[in-house]
Image (cartoon, each protein chain N blue to C red):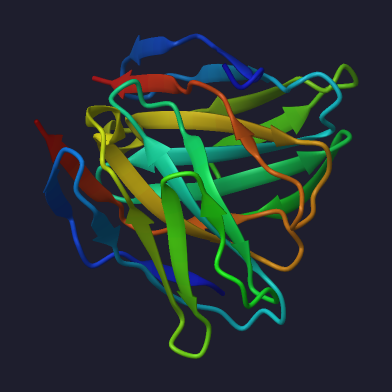
Length: 114
Length: 114
């Protein structure tokens, strides 16, 4: 079984600044993927970034990057140069080895302030 | 637009009733996943189908059932509805199950049980 925990229910950041969202997970899988999803007010689930557990290099997608600490089972998301459009719920998730089930954390509501 | 379509967008019904939610996957995707997002339970995986066959089950109640048809669209049937079934139901699709295959989410169906 997999569990994902997001300990920050809400966060805020000033426009153009950097913010880091925390996530810890637990899994018994030998290989797995970790994800960050964004859910804006429209409720659409949008994939932000993903990381394969076997890859030591941290994933980066434009202004979004992760800090993957496998031993600590930590997977944080860093958003640089925050924009108003980044205001959303952010969900950390893990996928099991069979690749058929996403397990989500409780989410962090991020508010970007002008 | 992810390419995954869900109908209806909104559904309001009464306790004890039965409803059917429909999902059409992206063109070429053979695997369909259903997720429930509620205030109490957060985002949780319900069930997965691949090419018409059930592949994985999550926290799906016995009152709920699903199927995937030969044209690959899927339906989620919810019966004997209770107030606690009010939630946003997402369908997602991928080419196939597997860690490397991204799940693309539809816009969701908002179910309200009165």
